[in-house]
Length: 156
Image 1 (cartoon, one colour):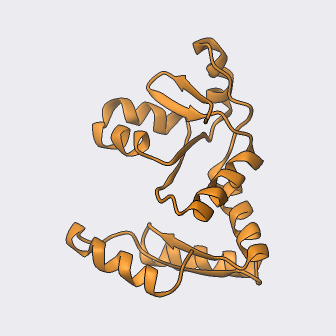
Image 2 (tube, rainbow, N blue to C red):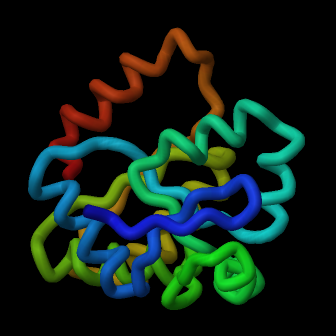
C-alpha cells in the first residue's frame, strides 16, 4: 500500500527518489498504465484555479513533490514526504535505468522543436538507450492514432 501525504489540494506519494524510479519500473513490469506528475509550488497553486489540471494530477499513477517547499510543508499538514523528486532528475534516472534494462523511452509533449532537442540530448547522454518522441499538440480525435503509433514502435 502506498503512503500518501496531502499538502493543501495535492495528494503526493511519499517516496524517495529511488523509490519513485522503482515504482515506475514496477508499474511497467505489471502493465499498469498512467502518467507521473512532478508537482512544484507553482503547479500546486495553478491546480487550485484550474479544475482540469487538478483532475489531471489527481488521476496520475504517481505524484511526487518537485519542490522543496512542498516537502517542508508536508509536516505542517500532518504528513511526511521524504525528499524532493525533481522531474528533470527523474527523466535522467529513468533513461539510465531504461538503457540498463534494454527498455525504450518515448517523450510525448511540448512543441516539435523542443521534443526533438530533448530526444537528441537524451540520446547523447544515454547512448545505450532507445529514445524517441513526438510533440504533444494534436487534436483529441487523433489520440488513438498517436497511441497506436507509439505501441507499434514497441515502446515500453
